[in-house]
Length: 333
Image 1: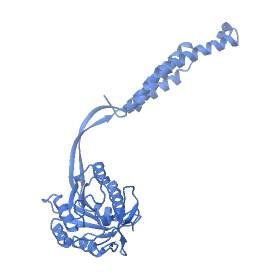
Image 2: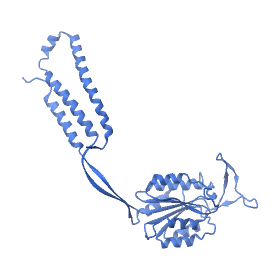
Image 3: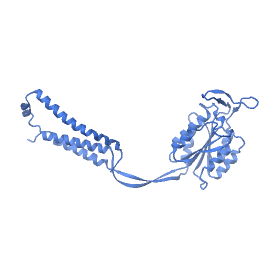
Image 4: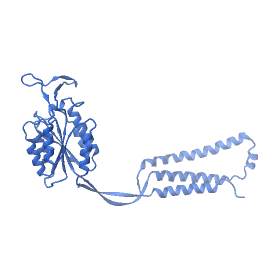
């Protein structure tokens, strides 16, 4: 026998307590009768009451409570093998980790906003595989495609600006790295979500997007930042801003969102461009688009499904309680 919720079996330990309660209740009742008056006289006045039936009823109640506890524990007798299949699409997420993502034109910062958006998207997924690519001057497969969303969020939590060895923003290389993470034998069920401020450093993102389209990949781009620009803060070890990044002639470097580039990448692959917002409505839009795509079988698993039999134990408990009610505690005339 298998138990669906075996934790309730611990309540069976209360049955002896119930037995002790009935015993002490009987003793206490007898003491009160002795204090009230002559026991012989009181026994004659209550001669219609059956002590035997009273004891039987208590036994029935104890047994009924036991069966109720067993019913709560969800007894399962018999089993059958069931095949479950998971369907979805492959989603690769590329996140910009260049120093420009430290700009705070979107609070708390561009990089933190991007991580929040990715985390929210992963929470929405149901059955889709997800992977993460990080990039700056070069790119790296941070998390290969997986159905383990907890693992993906763990990799996401350690992402920070400056983690890539080469500075800059190589969007084209990031797209190429993401393409390598997909199954080359397929020409659909593939999505790349690119989160960046769009400031590419001569890696030809348009050409990389064209190659991605040939592989059946649809790219959705999310622009992080503002068009007017923002200085890049220098953060000290305590997390405080300690000045701003400057160029070779001592001028403060301003980082601006390049929407034109991101729109072009999305257009080439029949995807869409969205600007990051506080309400994260762009995530809902992208998730709706992904939900409408054709799904493929990502995994199948054979598991044992047990048959619930709690209703029999519950039925026995109810029958015992009905018998206890019918018997009563009076002698037959």
